[in-house]
Amino acid sequence: MKHSPILGARNLVRTSLIVSLLSLCTAFGQTPDPPAPSTSDRARSFLATSLADKNPETRKHAVESLGLVSPREPYLSQLEAMLDDKDLEVQLAAITSLIDLKNPRTIPTLLKALNSDVPEVSFAAAKALWTLDEKLGKDALLAALSGETKTSSGFITRQKRDALRMLHTPQTAFMFAIKQGATFAPVPGLGAGVSSLQGILSDPSVSGRATAALLLSADQNADILQALRNALADQDWTVRAAAVHAIALRNDPALEPDLIPLLDDRKEAVRVRAAAGYLRLEGIKSAQFAVAEDAPAAP
Image (cartoon, rainbow, N blue to C red; front, side, top):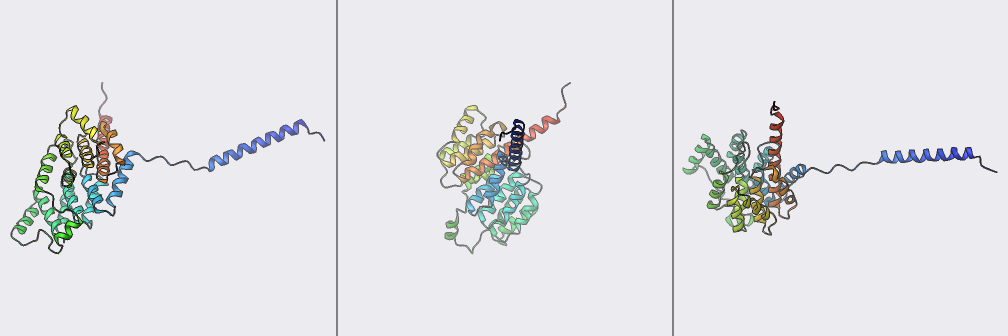
């Protein structure tokens, strides 16, 4: 039996329609790939993960790096929460970063820390409040001087504490950190990175080249900037951390791309500083953009 050409054509059209419908169903049934996270999202996520890490050294580095960002959310709340950390060094680093950020919430938070059951934390809060000209800080220091309060824990042996971590930061390193920090923060509302600086200098493995990077970080010479950029790829992690710290404090959003590769650095102390530094520069860029948008148009 011969097939009608008309029937054949109809069958061909019907088949094409079925194929097209199946293709559409398949296309609509597919789930599109989620968009890749932005660099800012990556940096924020990494900081949050580091703050919750089981390793106290990781949490300490993350707390130190928060002094490089700015006193806005979620960073301020994250920093305040670290005062309840179970590790002493993390709590002390949180106090230093809180002073650095100089937010109206700093004093109430330090007053809470002043009542800590851990003498080191209470004493650190007293010193911080005294630095901020708060009378309660002065009263607490006078009480410590007269022997009414303890400034250190006697129930933990020095050997055990040293085994957990290096407790005391050398006074010279601390004073250097304060002096260097005072030369920065030309942008209102941004920290001077004192806690981050102190964390780098207090590491037993810190190199002379890392110290040099920190010393030269305030110099705006183009050769210095190039040297800092080169130091981002140094084999010594303390040099890389110092370079990230110095570049972040230049407050130049054009340097953001230099910090992005360091988000994948093999050393935690470098990664958290790169994340905080990137968010600092991103915040400055956003503020500059907002100012430009609000500026009146030229006649």
